[in-house]
Image (cartoon, rainbow, N blue to C red; front, side, top):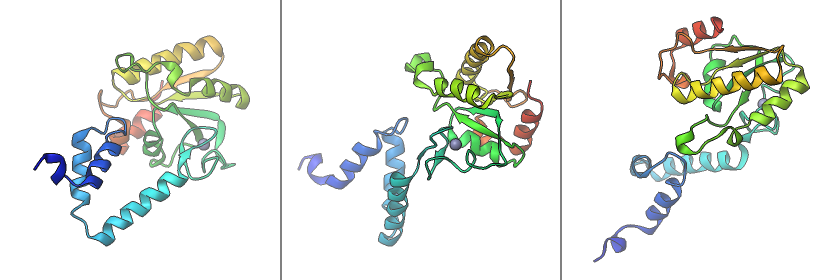
Length: 202
Ligand SMILES: [Zn+2]
């Protein structure tokens, strides 16, 4: 019997679909699927139902691109948050790491990635144009760049600092992550280091 005949078709379909998720290779799909299949049928269906709801309802906020289950996210629609302060992050999970500190009262801007020439990701692939127009619309006072402290995050930060300096010479542009260990992803940074890094932004 050929391998294809013993491998369940629904499992193959799942592998095909999950490996389409960026960075989710064969290994990631395998880890998820075989452990998922160890659950009871009831538990499996709960996972599926929550993923279904996620797929149907969670999309980037129209303004800041933070993941949201409404057209405009809770942060952008909160009148207590100042739109004069925009904290620029690579992904939504980086904004959540900063939110956990419960100190920042401005808004975010999610780039949707970082500049990575080797992977063919250039500034045009990120939400940089939307950032520029938000700075104009809100007459922003400070842009806090909170890209990750690694080579690509640094390259992205340097690109933005230069671009913003040219476009808005009077705008204050600061950078956090000084003090965070190089290579630590913001998402997984411990709260104390992240808080220090945020307060000591330069
Ligand atoms: Zn938003």
